[in-house]
Length: 478
Image (cartoon, rainbow, N blue to C red; front, side, top):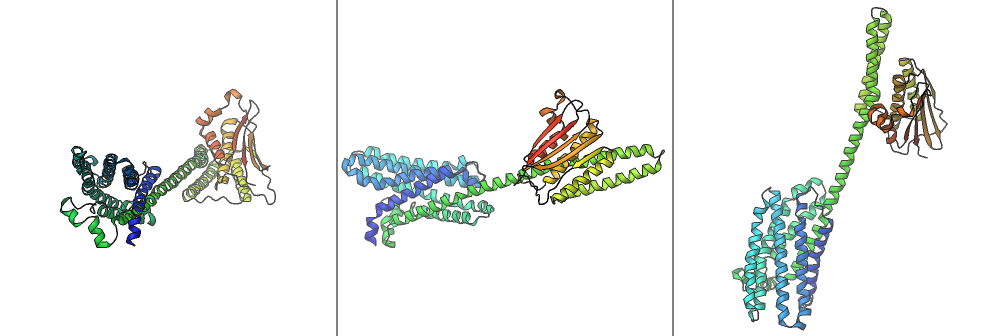
């Protein structure tokens, strides 16, 4: 077993570097800086660590293969570069852990940043002592010893702060109620805790302080029978798998944001519908009741019986308004059958005729087996269309000066066609409300909006002395 591990040490270095390089790429490509999770604002530092650390560890794979052909002079350059990349990567991991902790505790990150900065500068001052040793036999040994200081000063605290910072995120991540994400966060916390031990305390040489004599790669292998590279590789794989899997939290967050935006959009549309219904139904009814009561006031002294009947009718209409409001609030409006829809239109027109005295003809042939359903999925389409017809008839009374109106509804070629027209005075093209009219006339705007919500087209037809009409076409499902 030991022989197999000794032969494959370079392979373990390669897998170790590949693991962190994969983590860095995954974070760089997937994380969302606009996320509401605190961890998202620190992940760029973790990506920098993973990419640089992967490159630095690959140096242990390629240097033994490439360097002998060039002699000792290029070797110290490559080792120096590897040590520098390795320490810079630890610095970024240290910053990542510090930022996680400071953001969670809501403290000044720049004050906390002094710790990794001081640690890196202390290591770099020690590392730069190799310059006077260039050309001597002590150069390579000093560069190798500098790795121990890098692990003590940077890797060990970086791993601890990162594990602690990730542990602080558990409470926030639990709010999304996804066990796999929480489990991956726990695994990442454990992985970086192990990283602090295996990569921060187990150093390659025993000549740097008393701790290195007790705990180094040689004593670790003597105690366990396994090389430290195996444990570091396992830790790298665990941290990479857990971190990359945990990135799914941003997709979950995005899905929930989309769901919430759709919910808010539905609420907004419902509010708009309620406002239109209030204008087209409730307010119009209350306005008519007010006119009736005002008329009753004049009739009390002249015709008390007629005034009494009119007041009774007004009370009944107010009760209907109350019933309608309750239906809106409780969502009791139902789409009903096509025959129910036709009957409700007949009741609407009959009530309108009684209230206004206007003659209204109604034509709505229903073929046996006919099923009317607009292409646009709108459960309240019958209510929407009723309100359009109601508003159109109200406009006939208020604006046209007509004595007769006609409501014609039919289905032709998969199209629901609605025509409401009168014999009033009409208006010329110069007086056509056009788009500005739709914006300033609330009734016209509401009618067009309702039709558009059903996927249909709304057209206003008129001419001087030719009356006014509205034409509605709504595509139906087959």
